[in-house]
Image (cartoon, rainbow, N blue to C red; front, side, top):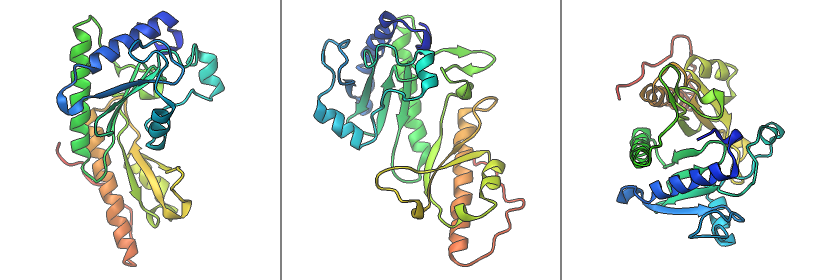
Length: 256
């Protein structure tokens, strides 16, 4: 099947049908419901898409995606026939999400509170493997290159196609002039969290791995765990009034 920018209406609907069917075969602890976007008429069980109430709830929980507002993505063909054949799968606990025909054919996410990133990664692996096994019974699978790794619509995701992200409250560390240099040293990216309940003064940041090509998924997870652990340790020390010398403070990733 063609990548989303080159997909026809029929191919996009074929993707939705294949993925929606595969989602029904997930293990019990991953079972949930597929919600076509409001206005989509391509999914027979819900011919008009999700209800407005369901849309409101998913948006409040930040589980929903919108039509891209980028002129670049629009010109590239990502928005053709919107919202037809696009939808969101959400598990019963509302912590596992699959976006269908957004920017990629499939985008999977696992979100949970607390610092147990490995548990979230194991759940993601279970979802990934279960979907793959079901898709392979229909003669399909994930796009993968022996040289580059997994392939997606965005070149920046080539390799693992994995975003490993933790949300941290680090108002003191993030104010330091060395903060950006520390992130680069730890092979991390940091973006200030944006949302209706987040204020800039709170120092809440989304911290994620900056590498996908030439690395492994396990290395990404371990790198984020180690780097975020270091940032939180530095935050505690600054809160106690200590001075920190960042030279040489790059932790070795823990074993998976």
